[in-house]
Image 1 (tube, rainbow, N blue to C red):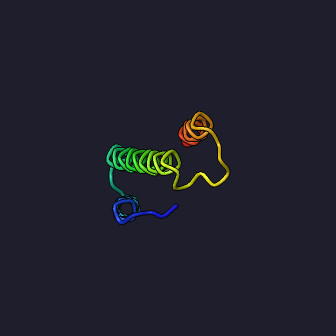
Image 2 (image 1 turned 90 degrees about the vertical axis):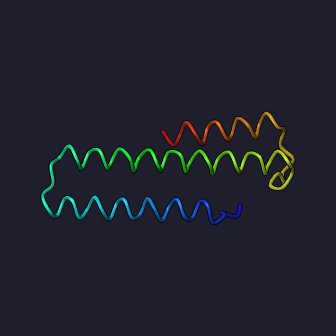
Image 3 (image 1 turned 135 degrees about the vertical axis):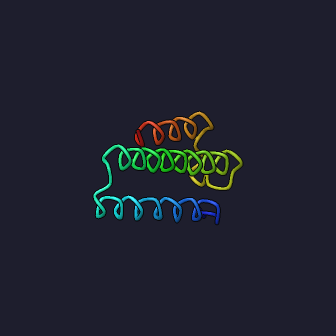
Length: 87
């Protein structure tokens, strides 16, 4: 699977958030602020996982990534399993 610039940009923003959290910790910021930012980062990661899984599923169903001739039901099941595993 190829990862487009949109996914890469999301990950760069998440990386920036994590770096910001580390700075906050170094500066001794309040734990509520740190937790808020950690939660935002986790949410951004979850959305990125969803984007990658859904893009992969669409590509597989359209035939771009289904070299082993699995059924659409199997492809959907695999995608759902990836989402469940990510939680």
